[in-house]
Length: 408
Length: 139
Image 1 (spheres, each protein chain N blue to C red):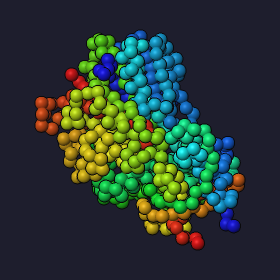
Image 2 (image 1 turned 120 degrees about the vertical axis):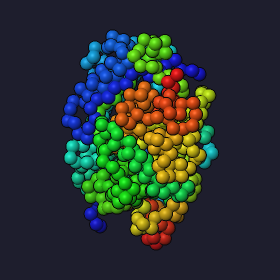
Image 3 (image 1 turned 90 degrees about the vertical axis):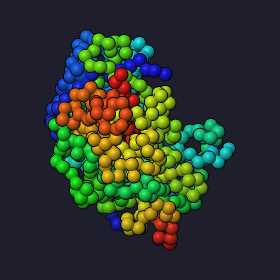
Image 4 (image 1 turned 120 degrees about the horizontal axis):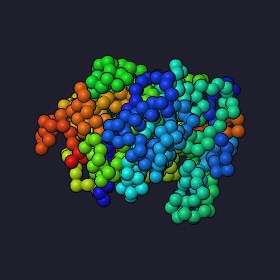
């Protein structure tokens, strides 16, 4: 199946640790920049998509929903979607691709806004955790149903804990080391140094990494992304409609949305893989391109281990081989054969929750990345020129969605 | 009895109440299909193997194996002594049935993947939380 869909615009608000600004305003900033970037106007937008939709809890997780953005911009919509039960954060963008492919809309504005930095204030992550920050003895009135009832009684409220257990099992089965995992964080920081919007830009050394405090073994502080404020938006257009846009359309060559195992953080069949395994395999199902054809990869790093998981899942190395693959960091560096997280990822550029990777893939393919613009070094027809193919992938645990973009 | 640390407790609901109260008589139970013996966890109204509806809580040995773990150093909640071990335990009767819990009565640095463990309950209000400890730790 060839999707009749392309990325035609991308925008981003100010990004900060704690901006203390109205998240809807950040959203409008990102949306207007994306619309301008595509050479479109508000009147051209007939579709709207977001993740996770309007949510009050956890604080800061959702900065704006569909209705607020539609109303603020007075959009006339033929199609819209917002929600959280989809193949990861990019599932909302993939939904938009399907909408334009099916002809329900021509130009869909997709956005994701977070304000987790401001929501935490000076109280740290526990301030936004279920039951966090509340005192009282056992049975003190706070009760939890749903899937969190299996985590919270045991002091395991964070995805950091859940993902750490996958990383530990990966270390156990394959001999993966902290020094290997560190390359994801060190690479992100090195790239962030060239990104003026990145939150952490000071150089980081292996010693810095190995000596920072442990959060939940084997994940240390630098294996965890940084809660932030910011909004990202992209425009998805039908290919025929994309002929009118300002940027070269980035054709959506294929997508990965599969999950064949149990949708669970602890009942998943293989504790060294996640849903990325199935989404990654599916990405190659409907395309003749292969991992060797990909110029850059922007792979989710909410926690560093997730990037390792995506590298394996997308076939850039074999199962269990991501440690040796990233060892030393040369292969994934900006001048390596597979530049990875060229903006600094969520680890250093800020937790924009999935959409940041797609934004970065787009601006790199359009050669709009400024000081951090990547040149292809891998031998082949594009060596020495700008990248023309990219994968953006997002999600961890039972959430996984991936997109392969091509600039023809 | 020493004062218990703060823990967020599960809300007792018709599908899960048997599980969280199972420790009252010292036994761990998982939902099981009477037709084909499949264990079902977390509890669901249908057997995933035969889609049968004849399901009932079934006593298990309380023995299991540490499939993976993490030593948590972050103070997510006030009152829990740091560090503590969070683990996924596979039960002996069916390793595909896993349970996220804490490993207790064991120094965090001594926990290993593959370690045999057994259930130990601690009562909080009307809930008997299952924890796991190394086999023989408190016998």
